Amino acid sequence: MIAVRDLWKRYAAFEALKGITFEVPEGMVTGFLGPNGAGKTTTLRILSGFMSSNEGSVRVAGYEVADHSREVRRRVGYLPEDVPLYRDLTVEGFLRYLAGLKEIPSRRIAAEVDRVVSRTGLEPVRRRLVGKCSRGYRQRTGLAMALLGDPPVLLLDEPTSGLDPNQVVEVRELIHDLSGEKTVLLSSHILSEVAQICGFVLIIHQGRMVASGSPRELAERFGTHTQLRLRLGSDLDRSLLASVPGVTGCERGTAPGSWLLGVEDADLTAVRVARAVQQAGVDLVELRHEASDLESVFRTVTRGGDGA
Image (cartoon, rainbow, N blue to C red; front, side):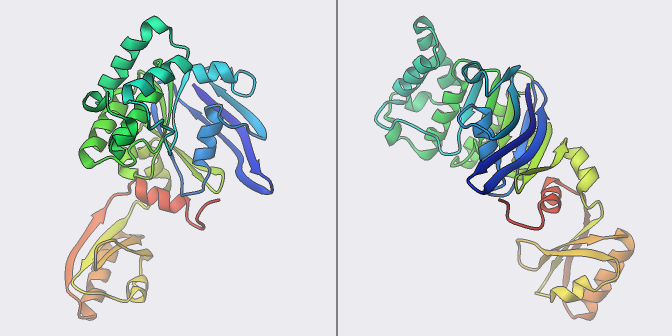
């Protein structure tokens, strides 16, 4: 449904995209990951027809974007990261206006607005001014905007941004329900969210595609299969853990006293780590094996810079 070949985008001397190539399978929810500035939003803008590229081929729903931008836009629902909303219109009025811009026949507009309002949970605020809505409802209005006209392709840039935990779950379920029905390319910084709802993942870094595949395939290919999760009763110098034979990587966790260790032989190294901690006079609260996840894959393939 989406096919990108050797795509380049330059802003003066700065190269935002450096010849990326990928495909998005039809009817699948695909996660699009990368550090800030990696080129995700630029790619989505080009796919939607909002921005042109310098080189390369981009086909969406069978149409070349550069040659048939209007046909592509008829078949794409795009939710940008910063949703452009007319705050002086009601939610319903805004969606009616956009339905007209999307060339939905006037006799179908009322029913189509009802459909997207119902699907995105906007009933409580449909007659409220957009500017008077909470950030969460404004984000839902943007999602309803993308769904207008029932396009076969959805490009969603951070669709759960600004939502409370309950709303995040509802939007996740909505996107998951679209799997098989629509082709969805979803950009998100919430890796657990991508792992839950995406059957395929693309990872971009510094304008280049660095990994693609299912979350399980990526974990097998790039993940550190032998990891130890360590939690201590007090702080410990990093060099002590890093010097334990068999430890290949050592990262602090988010919780106080927590560490994630990459190891060669998990069972043997766990014994050595426990002994080193004990000899240092520090309490060992927890020591367990941990399987690779999308977060560890992301860190592995994007290590070495903040993106470009």
